Length: 256
Image 1: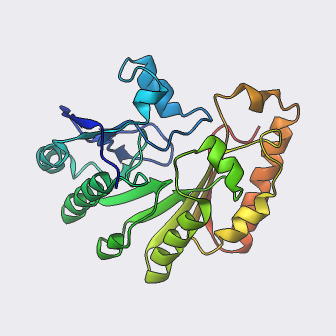
Image 2: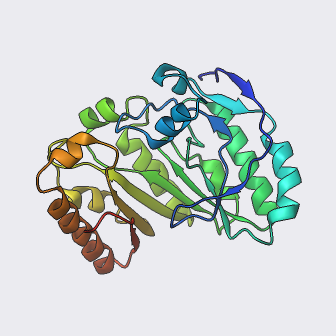
């Protein structure tokens, strides 16, 4: 197992998110060892505000040591306002190989569930089977933008192999948990030539699919037909989900 670089403390933990499918969120880790190179919006944001100095700093995560204490203080004040809490928007709650981070994530979800608060989870790691024991209202998701391992090694270098992510999600789904998949940031063909239907078929068992285009990348905008490409691909996702009775959401700005 890998060790976190160190520990930090924060003054607050739960806050409102501006993401259209989110409500409240928590980020109990600074940095992310998965080291995505799309580039990662969270890394760009933290670097801009001086919270991390460079990419090498970003991929050595720090755990927020007072996470549970903050939740004990904030949950009673906010629980009547919160519809759900998302883990996480600027880090990964089940970072590959970091058992200490995973254990903290599960304890945080347990606290929120005990207060009657639903949690949604998104990871490029492995969803642990311990999640089966938590609230049936929770929703567990993986990010999956390809099935090509060479692509993953280049753009998500330290994340979990795609097939292992899918298998962990399937295990939770078969147990009866609510499951979802985020197909974002989906790459244009000048990154990789692939068929979106292959990805959709691989996760056709899940309850919900979210689809979004790649952002913050010059290479994507240089693809001359990128607007047409995302319009067409989003329609394929919608048609597939409607055919298979899967809930879906197309991220704002994906369709032009």
